[in-house]
Length: 245
Image (cartoon, rainbow, N blue to C red; front, side, top):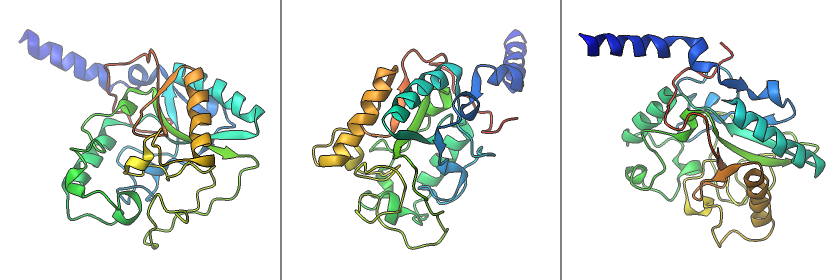
């Protein structure tokens, strides 16, 4: 009975929005100049549809991560660039959506862009999909750099012909050249892959240097992925939706 009561109390505690989100902020409230392209709110992602839990196209982060990112943005602005975020806090229900999709081997609708050289049966084994994500802890984000003034970026049209994510004529993102697009399931996305040279390599290092200098660490397999050192919730995976509410 005591164990059952404790379980009920814990369930109620995490169901309370104020308690679950008190340490989080909407990035635009902290630094409104950072650009947003929240891909999982749209159909332009490796699944091909809006992901569960993304009720608004917002970047939500722990307050500590948002304040650290504000420092990076001020450095970027001084150099004529802006940060652009693709994904920030990610609810566990979104991760669960990824897992269901990865297990559905018949769903290959976005393969031609996001994983053209990877067999879908290998997504778990190769580490592209996992049942837990650091994003759900609130201090991890995916981002890139845009040269100012930012060029127009046309919207993705569901069903349009796809181009692989490392092709020179891939989807016309308005970011600086990074060698691959965002969420490209390929070893070319590894931050220091030696095949990425010239301006793309310089741009990756510019992003990495600025983020590391502000207290973030990079995931070596993804040039766009950074986590705040000393994150406030290192062992908690939240599941409230991406929404101001």
